Length: 373
Ligand code: RIB
Image (cartoon, rainbow, N blue to C red):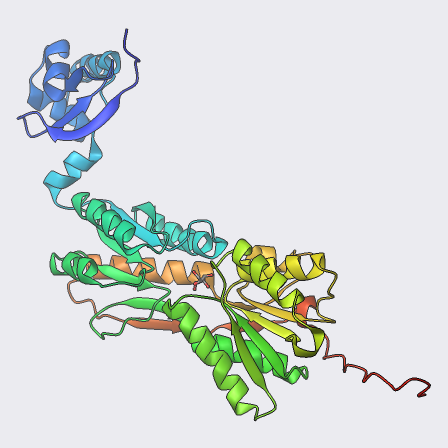
């Protein structure tokens, strides 16, 4: 006895309609099967699905009963393939576990819903091959357009999508070409603001904690270096590589900092994002160091967890939902309006100071000679 759960398999039954495996898993239930059960034509069933008002109430009821009895479930993707246009957009992000991206997705979903569109949410894990597989799936689904935080790698799949007339908006990444829409934040300015803030508190030995060559990371690191260079020779920036851009990566970096001899330990840390900063905070306090007394910390993104951390975290705020909303609106414009002009929207980051970097550097007392006063 099969499970009465409709399983949908995209395909056609020769009537130009969906072929749905429904009822008992494996037994095909198609439009034609429904028509035979209801004693009507396939065209009548198609009308039931697309223009029910064209049917008499009695016919509508007969088809409805057949659909229910057979467990027929419409296969939207097959319909969209024929229509050539879908009511969905694809969103591809780097790390679904990072609240930055779910906040951005919130903005995307709000704007897409207002435009009558649904969102297919994809997580690439920053892996170009996985990203490519998702882009292929989105192309097969004939999505209306794609919003993507690109993994680092070649762009030929994105270019191929655009060449087929599928609008693509880069998110959290400034487009290098004018003929491409993008929505991003000035991460160089964000990195510079974070380190200028720490230098302004008297810190001269600052560490940048982050890893990889993603543009977001490279730009923040560049901003940090610009700030240190502008502060003169006394200031120094060291880079501490993390294993990953999450709490575990931050925790490992924090343990490395805590294990450093006090005389050569950085007194301030700028982390590439808040997850890394929360990991550093956890490790430093676990090892008995005070934040900010021994080490001040600034993160990046200003996710909700930053403000409620054990030591509320200073951070560089990115307008996350606004980024998502703006990108989705650009995509809808490009999909709907032939006269669309591509735009590269760049938002400003904002320094938010909290307890983790709220006090000036405590000057280290020089150790006095025995008997000294
Ligand atoms: O994915 C790493 C970072 O890039 C995120 O935390 C967010 O800041 C994005 O811009």
